[in-house]
Length: 275
Image 1 (cartoon, helix red, strand yellow):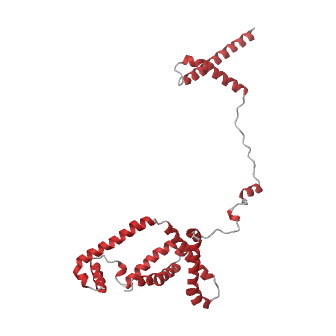
Image 2 (tube, helix red, strand yellow; image 1 turned 180 degrees about the vertical axis):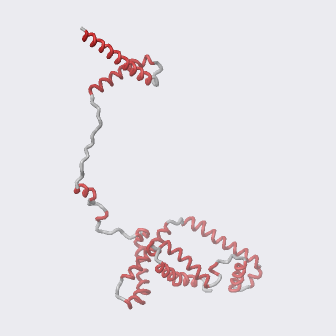
Image 3 (tube, one colour; image 1 turned 60 degrees about the horizontal axis):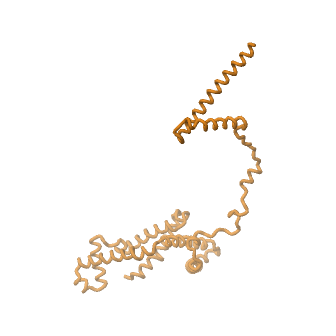
């Protein structure tokens, strides 16, 4: 009889505990539902259904963390990840085109450049002095590759120039600035005086006047100044157009600078302005 009374008392305590938990859960759910409805009494039946449904779900369904199987990779499986696919570009038989071909991107221009460079190398390198030293063709080919890379770099940079702005704005502004400078100096010297002078005397008078006003371009002061200016100009240009390994070699940079300055630019300047 005593054991029966204890069992009944335990059942009563368990019922009280469960009732309290149910009441707390229903109150919490009803309070959360007040965001959708203002009356907690209207939310109570819905809360009872939700709590009952969750209770049944937890009793019938077992929830646990998923266990990931960690498999030890073999050496062969490690090599399979590093194996190249059949379509990998590194397995292609044809090498990628050189950078200068991509920069020029014109078969006609490319053929004309190659023909011109081949003739230059044949006339001024191979036939002139290199073939007397050795029959090897590696050095002319290396020179040819350097020249084509430089021309390709120039071609790529020229394509980025906005021709409309260059022709309609930059060139016009440059010509206008020179005309304004000429008119100012002509006015300072005297229009009548300029009219009676010959072209050589007029150029000499303008040169002295610009030199006195410190407006004369450094390349026009003397032949030595012209050479120094062209040398600096080509030094900066070759630093940009040459490949990094050639541009960082002082000997290659010096020889290329002097060849272009003395054999290309200075003859062009003398052709444009013989005086």
